[in-house]
Length: 135
Image 1 (tube, rainbow, N blue to C red):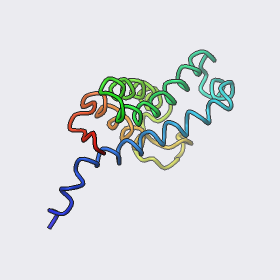
Image 2 (image 1 turned 90 degrees about the vertical axis):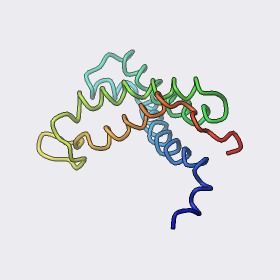
Image 3 (image 1 turned 90 degrees about the horizontal axis):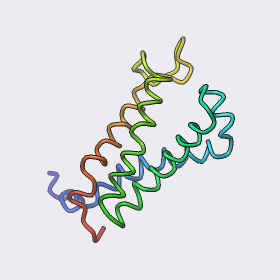
């Protein structure tokens, strides 16, 4: 039944890459426009907020670029994104699983952030393993 999908396997990595990269590029660009506001909202020094912003942008771009260049870029991009997600989970979303905002959790729970963390860890561990260069 699913035999026809087998030919798409070498290209399936793009589903994860575009999803993860899109989220991090979007959020990183939003922070670039107002790093000071992000730093103040999170109670972070501006320099650390800048590093978070850089990690989001570099991680997002690196996940895409890594597919065209080499395994190291993909792995470093996953490594850049993972601590950002751990920070988001523990500083903002911890204690509530459901992503919907609730009392005490105006930004929602950690469900979505855990999925992003797992995707980043996948690229950190797997790199470009199984990547079809013709994709």
